[in-house]
Length: 53
Image (tube, rainbow, N blue to C red):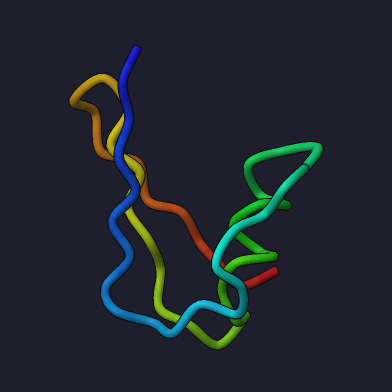
């Protein structure tokens, strides 16, 4: 399994997240709720991630 995360160019709130219960928690901890959406490419399938809660 492989994946990449493409986020336009929003400034991260932190450089990394050590633990997160879910992917939504990790993305929410990394980027501001006012940031643009991100794209997760998982096994060559693009999935839109909404950063806002």
